[in-house]
Length: 482
Image (tube, rainbow, N blue to C red; front, side, top):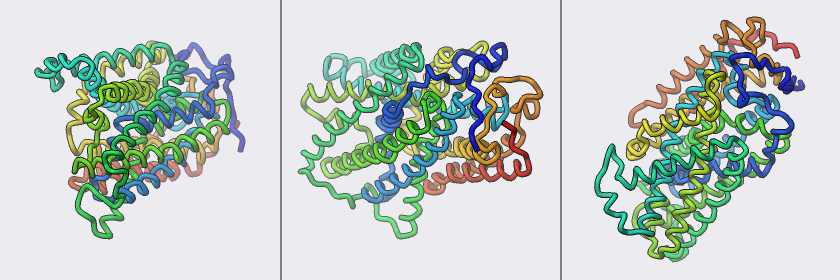
């Protein structure tokens, strides 16, 4: 069935408390994110210090190098399929994620999944800012070794130089977001490709030190039995999806700016199975080379950069990682909470104001302390899956099976009790029940102690259960008329 599209801004109830300029539907003039931009968006999502640390960290689950790459590739394929479903829907409806979620959860109920997504993004925003600051510290110490004295005293877990670096990058990101989504697009177009310069240079350098040979059968821990290997493989596969579960859910924030479905499909194809796999491969290659050279896997590329003796190379590499990570962070972890927080009170909170709130909260969570925890990656990602999996499943089932790709866009902004998405006082009980049950089950799976392979299943469990419950509760409900 064809999509019912109502994109005329004049048809939007501008006096409604549910709308502001940032949450308005996309127009032909603003639909400027083409295949290249979406390709760069996915490059940006993959090319970060955190992404490298994640890919390398998967070796700790006991798989060999080639097994880890294959498991991550399987996860990339699942991510690709999900991005096409969300991306095409977002492009057709033409609204940001929290407004899109109103169709499933109700005009007020949508704030629940939106704030869950915002919470995840705030944590990642702080973490990525911290990781970028570590690259900046390496750069500053090479340029001016005298700054070493600023690393001797700590306050709340960060040295003086650490605080300076963190706050400088924190402010730079606020400046970028202040100029709106067009500058965000340009930041993505720059940040995504530029990291390849640093990663390729780093790979060539460490491979040279490793004698241009590595063992893809090497592992950072003892070999696993057959059953445990399968369990670890499945765990790594779904952790790959959980790692990108947040950006996957709010992909409509960007896909809505695309002019057509073709740009979505092409951008996703180049950006996910092609580029994401390439980044995984080069990350594992670098990690296996460090295992051969140093006898251990270095999970932080900045730590590896710091071991290079040539100051010029160090300065360039550190600058590339710092600048690119800032661009990455703005795209992945600033846009979503800015929209999500704005959605709670559109008349009073703009996109920019939501961004400021995000930035302040990202300091308060003290991300450097979170990153120090060795089990943080696996259990935090499990938690992300527990929250984002159900939201994904509910949105997909509601849009494609319950509403059959039909949306009255004007009603997404209407407070009228007769409007399509008012449901029960602005909340859809079916979606909220599905979210509560599947989210609860996902959290229980995520918090299973001493079982990283089970924890990794929180995303598929949450997504499948959320989708199934939503569909079951909606059976017999007639799809809305166009």
